[in-house]
Image (cartoon, rainbow, N blue to C red; front, side):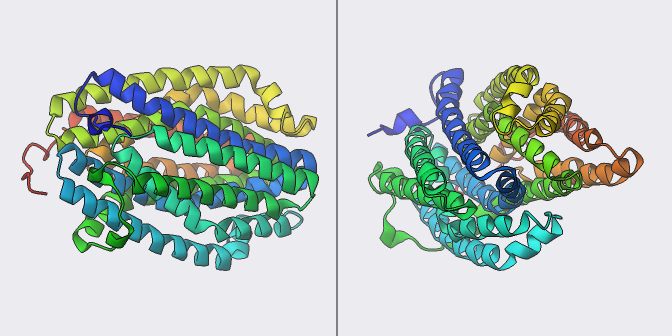
Length: 453
């Protein structure tokens, strides 16, 4: 059992706290990415490119739905981390049990929305008719497991907010292996079709949610979960929504823009869909150092601000940004160089490969900008200023991205025109964040806050 001080990020060497927290996150996300990729590899190789296109086209839509609730779980994590940093145990307890109750409600809602709206949403995205039945099937089975996805994110968010990123890693590894084994049995051996690939994912998510819950039931008293205490506390819900809604909106905003990008890619036909779908799986690996550092920074900043350690928060912010940018760029260069081999692992059709490589070679060298934007967003979220990244992403990654694509593709009807939407909008958001970071005091208001809440 971990001692409490081992998860606190308010003491000990800054670099060590951030790295030891970020590393399990990195490995956990790596496993998650591996099992998403295994899903596509198994589907692509056993069921062919039509089925792969169906799974790929559902991807951005699934993230739109799940991303919103993920953002709210992140907001809850900020609230819990701040009370934990301030050592206000009664508040930590109230926040945790409210978070779980809120998650259960959201999970049920998401199941209903996903099941009812699946065909309509896929139509809006311009999913080709021949891919449609498979896509609807995949989507509906996936959303039957909504409760598992939401609760897994809520429970992992609680563990991470108190500085424990090791247990979520172990549970992810177990569920990833389960998922791959089930994929091979359902799709490879039994030939059950696309729906069974989604079913394998749902089963493994329920397993990881259960393991997280079991861990929290036997955690140290400060953050132990007691199922009898699970209820909505109005004050805590207000705080969770204040911190979480902007993050949830931000995820959904980015997803909506990506759905528009995806429907533009769809208009180039199913070879483009398969090629870009393969690239998006590889890009997931490029995002790993970015995601884990931005999440580590959110927890680090919120715990230290809770403990009123403002200088420590500033030093940690600089260290995290620096590490993330360097790592993201190294990964980007590797993907740029090896993209032909990586894409052909999913589908060796030359046309599919050329679409995938074209996308990789347009965007990968700009990963450092993507990293900068995400880390800045993570820091501001930890500082309770989640609306700043939300509006920045809304303008740069949604309104400008969608406007650019709508106009530019008409003028230059090439798929590379669509790909350039990413580097251009990453550049804009980086400029906005840097200006805010240096001009505005992002800790402003913290030193003046009363200490009771």
